[in-house]
Image 1 (tube, one colour):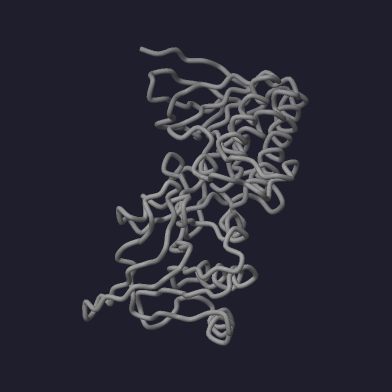
Image 2 (cartoon, helix red, strand yellow):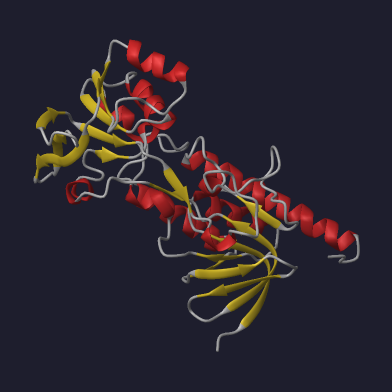
Length: 321
């Protein structure tokens, strides 16, 4: 039987949002505890080079950036726990949070920064070339493909936006869609179809990512398949951007917090506050639009400041729940 531990600010998640919330909460003297989860550092730990995070003119390895954030959070007084949250009870304060290791926490305030994960194609060769040609973020990695041919797979707004964005760098963009019509907004469809640097491959799926084993490992193309006829063709591209959606890690709060139609946590406008007083959501778990390390970090800062103000208001009002 594990312990039941009280804490003023409990942070679930160890990406940029979680670590930044921890830094600000610790500096405010709130003695935060951060539960790191299964993937300490979040999605950035799968990124070889981050070139758009302020303060690193030469870029920084994703693992190194997250390690620096972790060390800073610990340096200012955050207790980081290597465990996985399996349930939360938001019906009353303090909130009961149970972990896989057996310990439980009673949190006066809770910051949910569990992030989101890209949906992948699920083919073995895709996994082999992640970070070596295969990406799920054009904003993060598009710059590396300046003057090269690339491909985007998907048919919704995200895929259309990624394809248009990549024309700023790539010499040509091939958009691959398994159907014969896009799902995205009409205005976006028109922009894609009229763009001189974009070609659409209808009724095609990515059957295999092709490349050199290296070292260094590098992608050289794609094998496309017509799911109707079974016909196969090869496409020479240096990069593949998978844009078939993301799924937020909100399983533990389903039925307790308001979620939008894609499962992201709904917060008040210009705020990280959820509909449950004392519970805040920051980063990709609530952000379906930007999904950047720097915006996640900013929301982590907001969450910590709002948690501090919430605790101050409770103290002033005499501890009314």
